[in-house]
Image (cartoon, helix red, strand yellow):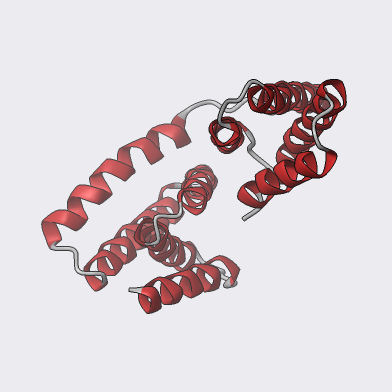
Length: 207
């Protein structure tokens, strides 16, 4: 199983980095990549791949029916074939595909609202404030004799749900660190322990 997962992760990287010129090539690569993110149970990679497919659907639909059909057909074919390579039956592969295809097409059809720089700044500030709130909560929980790991899990869950880019994640973590360090000073919490908590949170979010 370990060798299987290692191979899958290697293939994900090769799919992501490969240079594809045609809609068929890109669809083929993305179909394989999507299955591999499911096999490895990598939720972050799965989410990124789904987002990329949505953007590609929009791109090819804008270019016309033929490029979209070429992309979608190759995406479907490679998805099904890769599912079978990993032991899925035809019915199982079809069931998984059907669960993903409709949400992908609906998301691609939904109107998009481009963010302005002001919007981005607002999101960043909001994430930083939330991070500080949760960082403060972590130290307060520890000082009250509670389980800090519960708050860490809350921090990680929030980041994975709300941070859509590395820049947003950096903002959020900066806020968490500020909350931890400021609360440590306020409650005279051990400085080295505070650093350890920040490092533990960062290791989970940057893994």
